Length: 468
Image (cartoon, rainbow, N blue to C red):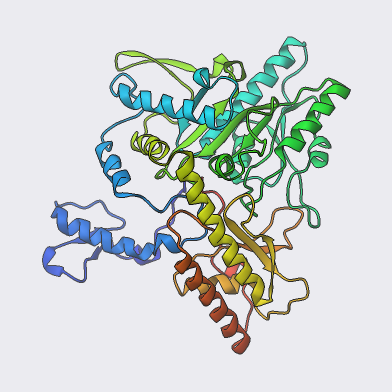
């Protein structure tokens, strides 16, 4: 969650801002002082709704992984569940049952050994789910160390270029994060780089199925095979947690023969975002464990709350139930066939855009959307002399409403600046054609009107990878 402390510039001298288009309604939007008087509901709604228009069009937000398309039935179910707190299992038993069904369906989708008895839970998003997976790894590692009479005070976890939630996990729960730095054209975790950082204090290795920065899959099966070999040589038994925030709802439908999930015995837990390519509204995530033995009993709390015993494993407590119900709606309505059709179409649109970008002649494609996530990631071609930066291009596109992030890669490739777009359900081929036309217009503009000062990250619209 974002932390706010500074007074907004437009509110530094005024506690309220009049509603300019309809002063007869008597509406003033408070900015620094709590209002004294009651305001009419319709006028209040209209004033706030008008201000929200400044957020822009979510369909043109090509930075986010999150769902921006909803069917009317999904909106209706969200409204039906607006008063349901999913944590109250005794008060809302059918919501609890539907959550349990989703866990079983995901266990089947991710090839758990026994889906009927799989263990897992919903979360507020993939960040919470990832932290729960990390906690389980730490607890199991500490128990093994204690059983062997060895110290358990220096845990580490090995990752590639990960989303910020893993940095939070490491800091909040006192685990050393061994994030493998990038080198040259190697922008992902590999078996060799993972093993080089593993030791007796490694609680787990975390490959990502859909890296935030480039949208590619890290080689889970190859990393698992390397860890199998490590165990045969040294006795070190290091588990894998797969961060499948995006890929967990893509790979089962578009590349079902790809082994990344519980078919690999070394994969002990998986997290995914239901509100990304799972197509559920914000915010719901999922954490699943291969077997009950992979989730330590000590991490579950049995709470006597509102009339019954409630086992729970979560960082949050009260939260809405609608997103879970809508996740179940999507599973039921779409099935494998529907998800496959949506994601295949998204990949086709991505590759069409990628071909058009390649045809401009200035860019080098890092990911073209034909594999892994339906997304495109690019940088300037090696010999290109564009006369502008990708930050300039991002700002120019923003003038047309497009949010196309530009950002530097993590260490040790902070010199590499890339742009990336996600093609989500609801983004059409026509919108893709319009985007390409606007990129071509922007390039032409810079070629005929070179920027006097090329923009760098501090001067332009930045991009935050924290949304999960």
